Amino acid sequence: MNAPLPLYNLGMVAIRMADEGIPIQAIARVMKVPSEDFRHVLKDAVSAGRLVELPAEDWPPATPRALRTPTRKAPRPANDNRPGEDDEILILHLSKLFRTTRLQSTVLLRLMRRSICTKQMIHDAVEDNRGNPDEPTSEKIVDVVVCHIRKKLKPFGLALRTLHGQGYHMPPEDQYRASEMLREETANATRSYQISCGAADARSTVEPGGVHHGREGAKAA
Image 1: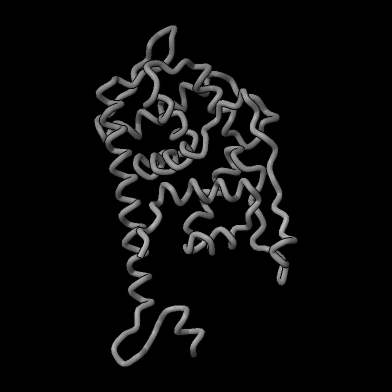
Image 2: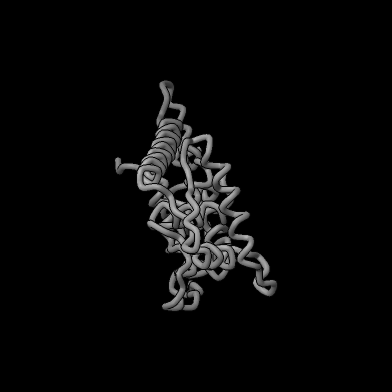
């Protein structure tokens, strides 16, 4: 039997298929997983601008394969610095690990990767994650966002430093520790997904007495 698809790859593949206009239920059938396992990832991708909109729920009934026409989204601008598909999965795991909001996780990921994040960089992240782009925000909001992130990191012994006149900085040792924690969180999520797949496979096996609980058994009945 093929190894189950890790959660990290599951979300990434789902986003890419949705980007091609493949319906949600069709993606679920191809990957052989419940649609709810990745639906929230697609919704977050829409919020972040990775997808123009969620794809259709399924192909129209009785539509021949040759007549299925996915809708493609517009190409991503070359100057778009928002998170890509891979980052979307990391942002989800950061939110679960540190109980941060999507915006806070987006900023935190930048701080984990850079030696310095300027206020402008963080303000750009705020602007990219806002629900109402018609109302611009002040750079003062950056201090508020960083303050909230500091509070979420404090129980883990992680810190953010203010570099006056430059921006914000996460010490290298804290960047390393945070990255290791994120790696462990991702690995745990993958193991949980594999266990759930294993349980589903076990329910599909034939028990003594000939009782079959899988889909094929249901069809035979």
